[in-house]
Amino acid sequence: MKNYFEMLDKTIKDYFKILSDEIPDFLNEYINTKEMQKQSGISVSCGTYYTKLFDKMIWYSSLDHSIAVSLIVWNFTKDKKQTLAGLFHDIATPVFKHSIDFMNGDYEKQESTEELTTRIINESQEIMKLLKRDGIKVEEVDNYHIYPIADNDTPMLSADRLEYTLSNGLGVRKKVWNLNDIKEIYDNIEVQKNEQGIDELGFKDKTIAEKFVKGMRILSNSYIDNKTKLSMQFLADIMKNMSYKNLITKKDLYELKESEVIDIIESSKYNDIFNIWKNAKKVKLSKEEPKNVYYVHHGAKLRYIDPLFNGERISKCCKIANKMIENNLSYDMNNYVYLDFNF
Image 1 (cartoon, one colour):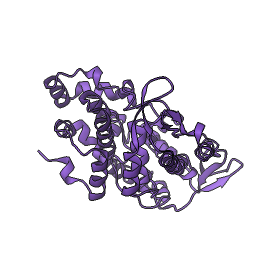
Image 2 (spheres, helix red, strand yellow; image 1 turned 90 degrees about the horizontal axis):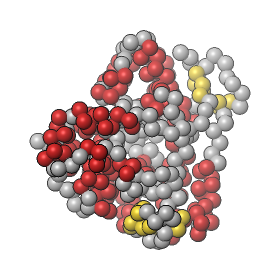
Image 3 (cartoon, one colour; image 1 turned 60 degrees about the vertical axis):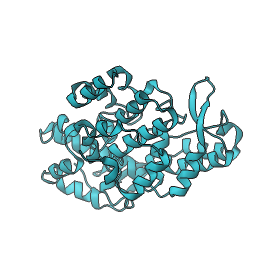
Image 4 (tube, one colour; image 1 turned 30 degrees about the vertical axis):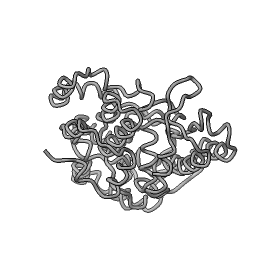
């Protein structure tokens, strides 16, 4: 059986070592199940990896993200069930990730695919066999929301929110920090009690918390910028149109790799517009509704973090951090964003 960790890119391997000095033995068997391995063909970029609108990104899969979340949970809890819940949290992720939420009309919460998690685990003979061997019930690992270190509500800091902020800033989304920065940030985090007396990841040092918020703001704005919003809605619309014409099925979105779906797109009548998007270097903006073009004009999920610093929100005790968070929350999404083609 292959060892996922031995095959990693060096940068990602070094990043994972920061997240956890120890790789728990039980993880490899769960990682090597068919359902988890399927996530290796899906980029966390929600499809934006495939267009020249963005600088070249590091390939980072949904599997990489899920494993990294599980390592963070393990590092702070040493709890097997919580760690597996972190590993499984994106097992229902389809191709192009949250773009399919856009397809489902869920561009604000981006949670429309999560309901399949329990079913996928239950229908996996491999995973169920491992869980039975380990004396773990499905309901103890199919919903990471029940474990506050793994997941919690915005703007709190959880393993999931921490992971995608660190990895996206390492060059998956933007080059915000290097491995030394990530180590400095990560080593400053501990489990603290929040306002409700619930466990939450928090910072020990105010300066480091401020540094994290600064990077988070840059990344959070990038998740809702015009080219991202257009790209995600464009991929959603292609998938929706191809589904209507029976060129692709909903099942395909959950079983194929992104490269395989792209092959289907490029063999269809949508190839020309797909290539326009793929080779575009910038999007166009308008205050008024543009005519005879493909445009997007709606909001998007605001992703931001207001972490704890010694049990208190950093926004309450740091004016600089508070201003950066307010900047994040006031991001202008009122323009029409478009490219010169139409369906």
